[in-house]
Image 1: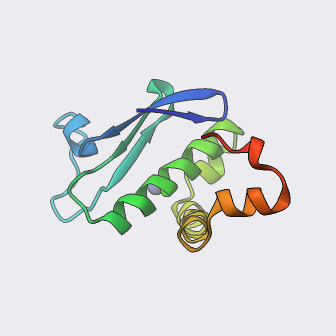
Image 2: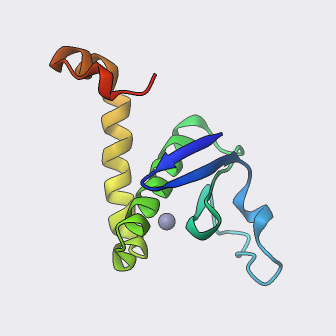
Length: 114
Ligand SMILES: [Zn+2]
């Protein structure tokens, strides 16, 4: 499906990102990769192999990488600690609240894509 992230229309795919790696790029077997974003190809992968919570957190993790790429902050794009910290907050914000209800309450419902 399509995902608009900043100025880029990403192709969001439910596919194990490791399958896209060349043999040279393949990570060690004990390395867990649940998501991947490739801004120059406008691709965002979420692996279908994991449980729902991991898939959702991986999605937000890759979104934060994408945002940092979009705003030209390569230093933060490469900072996994920063990326994971912000991603967890976005995941929890969406897990614990209904953005639609909030927007309805504050009178900003037209700002939410249906
Ligand atoms: Zn990352």
